[in-house]
Length: 182
Image (cartoon, rainbow, N blue to C red):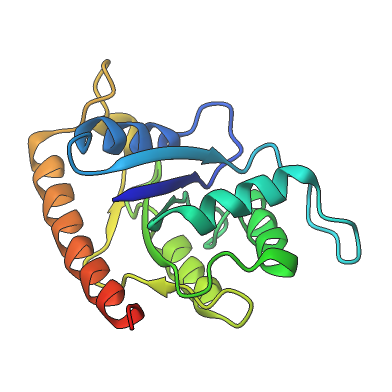
């Protein structure tokens, strides 16, 4: 399965980028994962011509089998950089229509990215997106600095849950694909 993984942070060092890099390394035999960054997008502005970077990003979303988004939580929601990138992607291109999407996230705080993920699911399910958002178990790792070791690896218990989480996503993906095929 080809996944386009979106780093939902514009931070120079992002634990969510670290999480996606771990997922990419851990699931090498299972998924073909390409990372995309929202940090290079300009802030969305209604009526402004779509930048070339947005069209290129939209094509990657559209051609992927599914999209993986890793989001931190900021002020009880998603970061403004991620929300702005999604606004660009819902204004002209609409690449998320019927696209299976899975959301993960991590944060330096104990609650992880729980509220950010809830808001992101709401946005992706709205008109203009129409994504097929996975709503099974949730992966929202808290205390990120304590989770990653010096090689970017995660503790065995976290990896075990991550494996379970993606097993559930694979079942969801198979069901969505079955429904989408005539």
